[in-house]
Image (cartoon, rainbow, N blue to C red; front, side, top):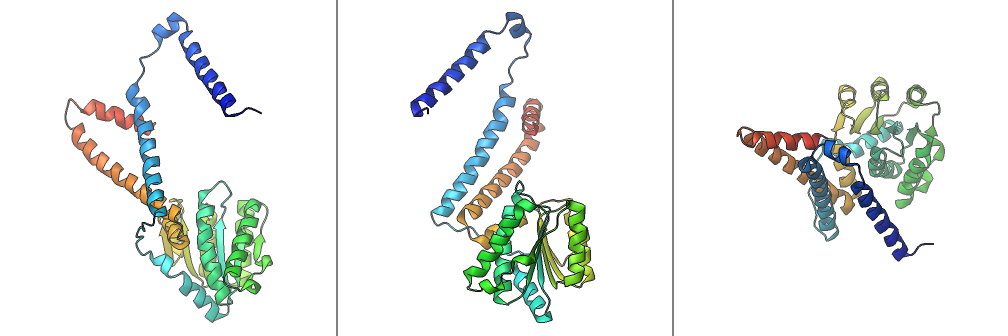
Amino acid sequence: MLGKRGIYFVLLFLALAGVVLGFCEEPEAVAEAAPFDWLAYLVPRVFFVLCVSLITLGMRLAKKGYRFNIRPIPGLEQMEEAVGRATEMGRPSLFCTGVSDTAHPELYASMPILNKIATVSARYRNRLLIPVCMERTLTLLQTTYEEACKSIGELRAFNPTDVRFFPGGQVYFAAASMGYMLKERPAACFYFGYYELESLLLSETGQVVGAMQIAGTSQLFQIPFFIAACDYVIIGEEFFAVSASISGDPKLSGSLYGQDMVKVIVIVSVVIAAVLASIPTLGPVVLRIAQALQK
């Protein structure tokens, strides 16, 4: 096993080898090579470092006790009302993450939302149905549901058979979930996660059974379908804001603050670049910077 010094020597050797190989290029190849574009090299890396620094700053401020305000989001405020409506009607609720897999950040962002809905459902003794598309997410969904019930002392409300895996892929999952909804007739449906074609199929089925529906996804192409069929839609990056607001995790709220600061800087930079681009001597430089960022 290599110690720390051994690892340092290996890295130093690789770096020196790269430098030596760079100097050992043939003279003709070096002469024919295009001049190195420092602007194209530095601009995207500086922007990356800026993004990471702002997000890290937000997380550190949150850890030190600074609290960031997240504006009220109507869909978030109606979740408990939807579960209460289903309880009054004597019908279950449904939570679905679509085709979210372990590689999708939407899956992990939806877990605080599932925890909140499961907690409210357990408190009201309302049955919660969770259809699952990807087998790798089954354990995570079951554990989150169980921990939510356990946290308020209502473990009896957890029924592992209500977290149902429908195999066969995306289309079979959508068809099986639609049949499941028509059979169980949930009165409150929550769709949070990564969605594709099943977004309209599930939300239209929810309309057929008369459910109150709340949806949220970062996939902008699926949002119009949710808007057409759901009562409340959490649009785009509001999805991650809802997750941060519900969880109360300072890391999530701090990273959200850092992302917002990056957006502000981008907007200001675009305005400044538009003004500078109108100056003949600075126009080509601004264009090169914009092209470097696109890469």
